[in-house]
Each structure stands twice: as structure tokens, then as C-alpha cells.
Length: 145
Image (cartoon, rainbow, N blue to C red; front, side):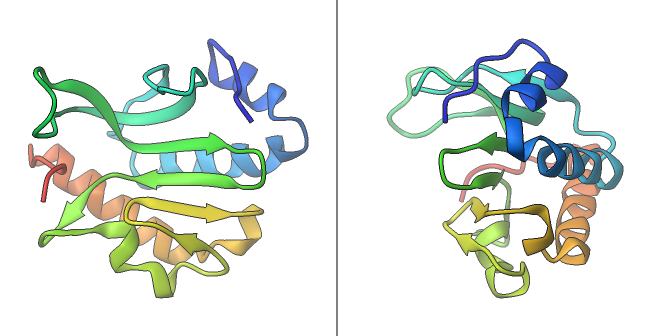
């Protein structure tokens, strides 16, 4: 589901049935990682937007110039909610590293997919986000393996 929005509230409202879950996840992110500045991120190739937290410079080998990319992002998809955790720790994506502890979810390298907020193990997500918040305030680069 491509959501077009210019603000967090507009994004939530346009997400219809998932609005309460997205608001809960946003609240969790803001409480556990208060130094990650929230932004409506419009850098999606699909044309949609997602809710981003903590922009950092990011560059792959194929990119000519670095881009700003959120360390954490939240997106309402057609069949699930995606929580992107683009940070690495000890050469491994944090989401993938904690996949077996995250609850009733499906994980990729940096993407945690779930149907509703209750599917998440909130304590583990808080732990991950708090750790990321501490690392970013220390000036650590969180991207790149």
C-alpha cells in the first residue's frame, strides 16, 4: 500500500485500519530512541513514503553520491507493517541478529514484518532501539557492513 502523506498524522489516518498499530509503534520508537529525529521520508523508489527516524548518510558501492537514509523506518504495506532497522552491529544487521527474539514476525536482513503491534516482542524492540539511540548519540556510523 503506497501511502502519500506530508505529515505523520496524515500518514496514520491514511493507513486506515492499521492507524492504531502504527501510532503505537511510533510511540515506542520515540520513547526508546528519542534522539532519532522523526521525518516523513520520501526517498522510496516505489513513490510512496514511510516514517523515518534518524537520518544518516548512506552510500552503496554502486552509488556515485551518498544519500540520507533513516536508521529506523516504519511503513504500512499491503499485507503487513514493516519496521526497517538499517543499523548493523558487529558486521550483522540488528534485525536479522535478533529475529528469533522479536515475536510473531518475519525478518529479512533489516526488515521486520508483522500483522499487528501485539505480534512484536516489545521488550526486545525497545532494547534494540535504545541501543541504536545510544550509539547514534555517541556519533557512531550505524550503516555499512
